[in-house]
Amino acid sequence: AQKVTQAQTEISVVEKEDVTLDCVYETRDTTYYLFWYKQPPSGELVFLIRRNSFDEQNEISGRYSWNFQKSTSSFNFTITASQVVDSAVYFCALTRLGGSNYKLTFGKGTLLTVNP
Amino acid sequence: ETGVTQTPRHLVMGMTNKKSLKCEQHLGHNAMYWYKQSAKKPLELMFVYNFKEQTENNSVPSRFSPECPNSSHLFLHLHTLQPEDSALYLCASSFSLRGGYTFGSGTRLTVV
Image (cartoon, rainbow over the protein chains, first blue to last red):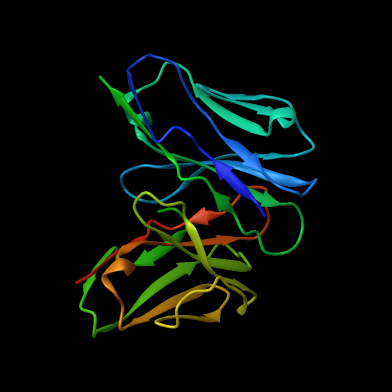
C-alpha cells in the first residue's frame, strides 16, 4: 500500500519569508514517481514538479526548490522569498512507475497562507 | 483554461435529484479519472478509464455512475445522493507521466 503524509496542516508566513512544506511517503515499490501540486482558491490542481525514484538530484525552479531524500522517504518543497500569490493548498502525491494508468496517492495537503 | 474542462462549476441538488457532471479534454490523453475532494481528507480516486474502458472502481457507491463515451469525454451521473457526498469533484487526464496529470477546475457539489 502507498501512503503520503503531509504533517503540516496549515502554515502561515509573512511575505518574503522562506517556507518548507514537508512530505513523507511510504511505498513497497522500488520505482515510483513523486509529485507536488498547487491548488489555488479557484480549485484546479496545478502541476509543479515530477520526480522519479531514480533521480535524487535536488531541483530548483525560480523561487521553488525540492529536496528528495530517498533514505528518509521525504520529498520536501521550499518556497524562497514567499509571495501572497503563493497562498494555496499544496499536495504531495505518489504513483508507481510503469503501466498505462497512473493512480496518484495524495497527501492531505498543506494550506499555506502568505500574509502581506 | 487548463486543458481539462469541467461543467458545471457549481451544483446544488436535492437528495432525490438526478444530475450529471461533465469532463472534456482535447489533449490527446488516453486515461481519464474522477477524484473526490472532501474537506480535511486526501483526494480520493473514484474511477479510472483507459481508452474508454473502466479499469478501476475504487469501491464507489452505485449512486455514482461514470460514463466514458470516448477518450475525450467523461461523465459522472449522480442520483439519490446523500449530504455527505457534498464535495469538490475533480476530473483529470493523463497520457504519460512527463507532465503528471492535468486536472480540471472541479465541480463544487452541494447535496441538500
